[in-house]
Length: 136
Image 1 (spheres, one colour):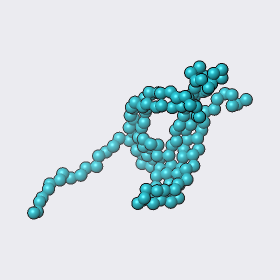
Image 2: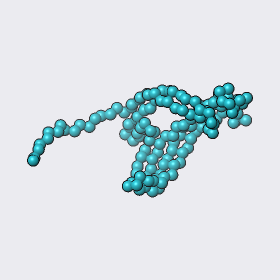
Image 3: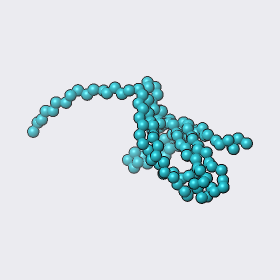
Image 4: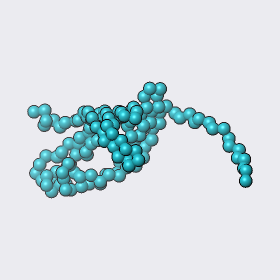
């Protein structure tokens, strides 16, 4: 049997240079690194895409990508801890929130595509907001 299918010509969809979106995000985090007490948070989570001629930023923060190199942005943080709400910190000062932001370069050293395995080297450089007590 021979068939004929008519398909409309493919059109390249023009995407905007900037896209900004926001959505809800829920997190369950320890009060601080190593804490056995946790809190739940529900916050708006913004993310954006930028499509330039030489630079692209996507939702996961990748700026540049080849087969062997990937340059991206790393963002991490902790909300801080109220010592009145944490039994282990009773009588101690509250912990300030911490935010880390910076570039990360990942170098692919070895990859086995069939077995979904890889060895890579990640080189992060984060700028950290330190509390005032660290200056003294």
